[in-house]
Length: 529
Image (cartoon, rainbow, N blue to C red; front, side, top):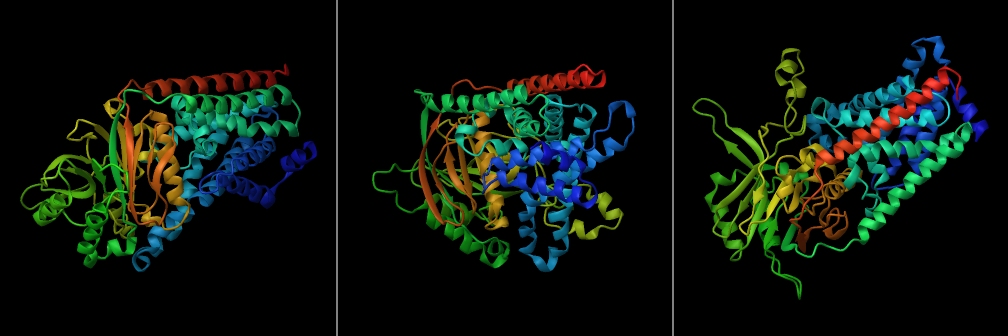
């Protein structure tokens, strides 16, 4: 190991560049649908040794080491994000004649931008770099703050944060309930980087012992929480998930709207399995109604005829809002709750829109400087100012998250603690049979565990499922399956840990690793290690 580490530290030129990109690409194998957690141990071990090669003596005071460290982190991130996000290009190929030109922006451009955060992470780590276990702490601090920034800078895109690689199964998800995504990410980088200590020996025994202890605590807490009994006073809600699995190209064709609507109605009235309970709530996916519902009273009548007495439909739809004479209407990506009389009894609009999918950021600026092709990308939605919880006729409250809103820990705000479950509706048919739907599903599960709430998830295509508050999927439909799934959800109205609690824990963890890295750095500079 020492010989291998020494050789990697001395790599230069294209060999060094290729290895940094390869290390990031290897790390992406920990993500769904592969879930190969060991890949991140390999990736971060290589990253530490590559960064060791940038570390000259701290008294030299040159900027060369900092530039080299940033480049290594950027290359690592580029390999990680290209391998983990290449499937985004699939959406552009659905209308290839119009949007194929943007394929390089999705497959290469976005990873190149996101990689800047990992370059920043290794730059921060290099400022605190030392020998021994201290440099492992420095890298954990760098990635912890970088992933936190990635969750909100420029609207945020925390997709495939490193911490998700440490949470492939419910046993390994439970720590997020206490530490939050970024607390888990910080400690995960520490654990994944620890094998690099075998290549230099200094600090290997205590460093590996700490990493092993953290990993065992991670597993132990998971086993403990999964063994805890279910809440005894929870209400029960029987839901029917409808997954029509309609091809996205068909959804984009205006002539198929009535057929699509009819498919949803027909699936919704399929008989309940023998011994099963009649659903209280039927859930349709994101934008499942392919027209403005309030402008089509016949459609509301059809929904009322479909629903049995006491049932409600929760459906994704597009809502329009007039702005007055001479001004175009606003459109919202919305959720309606419709009762058995065809009345809309509750509604909620999407707050966090998808850039270049639902709106074009800086549209006026881009138009002025001549980027008309970007302006023509699909979009046209407005964002809601506030999120509105959905209250069902029986009093159960659902916290609505539309599509990729579920990947943002910070979207669980306001009165979320009063919710009985998270509702996530989506349409992952945009991404076909690629890793995208599997990655989206994992992040939705982690959000359920993080907030201690069951998750009701309906996808046009993707993965529709009912997930309990500990991330266990107990009923669902797989990718490309068309049909319905009936399940009973336990609605727990008990106290929950707040986001502020998890945020404080993240900052306490981050401060601890920074302090450890600083002390190690000082010892390195003054020769006291």
